[in-house]
Length: 189
Image 1 (cartoon, rainbow, N blue to C red):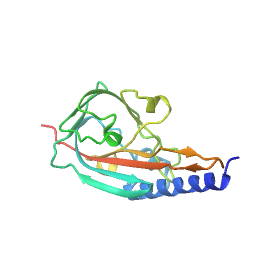
Image 2 (tube, one colour):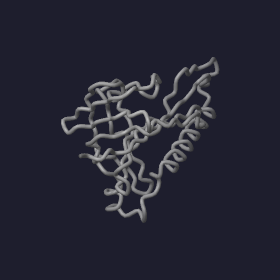
Image 3 (cartoon, rainbow, N blue to C red):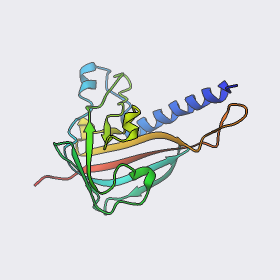
Image 4 (cartoon, one colour):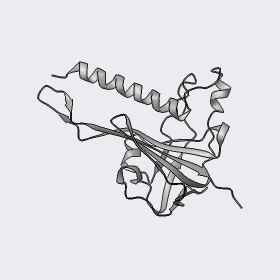
């Protein structure tokens, strides 16, 4: 028998964490709710060379760590032909860099899907190498605000690992993690 109270509590917690994440990233408001403003809230200008400057990781909805990579010279070069070239000394943190290893990758990027202007919450719009994550209808959240086209964020929210359903049909033992990579666009010569 399913423990509906625990399931309802998990859904509520997921919504709260999502809202906090979006507020802290600066994506929550869309001005006066004007649909034209919403359509122009996010840029689709992913093409270019981006320097990884920071990675933040949350475990069970608590900020675990923010790591400064600004001096590491890790470059993500998104090219027009859907080729992503990642260079630099990529940290050995599989959870955060699983699809982002050094070398050439195929990427697919769509303009941020904003289902409700009032909240301006973009849907997943980036896939790397057409991984299982993308085939399952999920992907990464990639946002570039029009107000700051020099900063890009790529994130993945609430992946749950190690979950077990006990004899009472309750979910136990789960650990959820989320991460966000922040980039600065490099000036083109």
